[in-house]
Image (cartoon, rainbow, N blue to C red):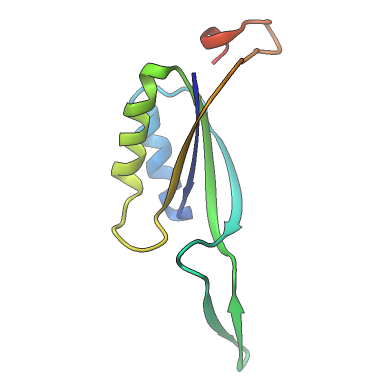
Length: 112
């Protein structure tokens, strides 16, 4: 089992959710986050004063998957989240040691 974390531009969230749903992903967790990478933020003008926006709004999509679903999920995310411009985000894939569904006590892939 693997845990995928994808950091994306906020306006791409619905596209990613739909793409994952189409390949059979049942559930995702979404968090609004702020951060920066190579973009390094930008300057904005507000009421005549210029200020630096260091952290940019992003969304973090998290999903736990069986091993055979990892590559299709990565491909689906890459396909719909890419704009070809800086700041498209990143995908992290990590191993999962154990999953337990609290309600039923199911474990492993059955709990996903």
